Every structure is written in structure tokens, then in C-alpha cells.
Image (tube, rainbow, N blue to C red; front, side, top):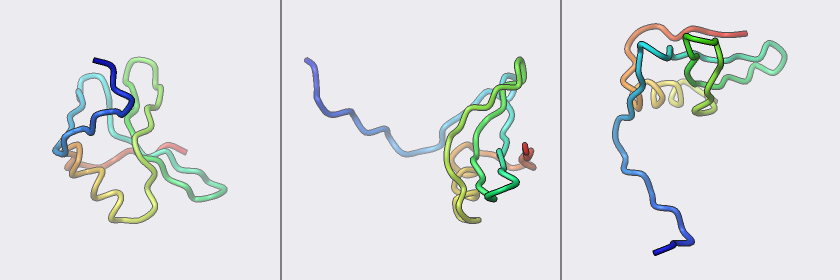
Length: 75
């Protein structure tokens, strides 16, 4: 049956394939805005996941995707 409302996703850790993507922060030099996401290794494209406003947001991104190492910054 067709539903007008979308189903909520279950909370928990999401995954990504490290063989295909690398975690990265895209940073604006002018405004200081930071967006967390993944950089594709094959073509260098960036997939946005969430806006980073403070250290708590960055920690939440790390926990959500199980990232323990350094995150590359793209300017």
C-alpha cells in the first residue's frame, strides 16, 4: 500500500565502504562552514552527509559511521 509518510530509519551505526570512499570535511575559507561527508576515490566527487557546527556534531558524525582516524579537509 502507498504511504504518504516516509518510514523513519532505525538509529544505529551506518557504514561506508573504505575501498570506495574516504571520510572528509569540506571547509569554506570565506565563511568557515564545514560539511562532513565522503570523498569517492574513483572520481574525487564529494557526497554530503551533515553540516558540522561544533565539535559535538563532528563527534556524532564519527560515531555514526565508526570513524576513528583523521578526517581529510578539502578547501
